[in-house]
Image 1: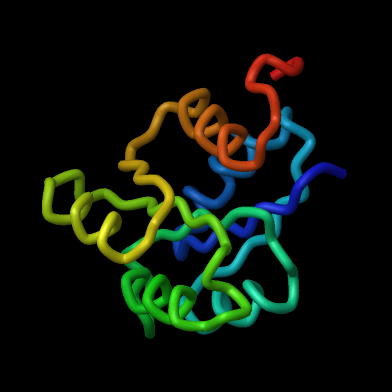
Image 2: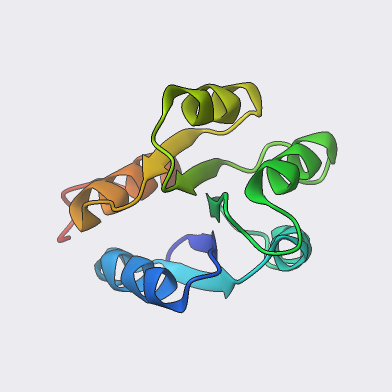
Length: 128
């Protein structure tokens, strides 16, 4: 397998869509459904990239991002924020929180794959 991507999304439908989008890129995909699971997996799974939904139960994505950035073990982990809120405020908050990218839902599958591959350093045109 290639690089490991941690997908944190509470919707099973969106998780499945992301998995289908990324499968052709030969990535190892790990799924979590909530903030506490995201923080645990950020350590235990050693992902190369996290795709982080903002609207999570228990602990929202902003808090997850804050905790990731304040922990020396995870502060360098690349994070792509995934949200249905496309307004400028969300984009600004993602930038200020240390996110490495911003993807809005609904997303185009090839755009998501391209953004992920850009962050993990794979060639976008490598048979995907």
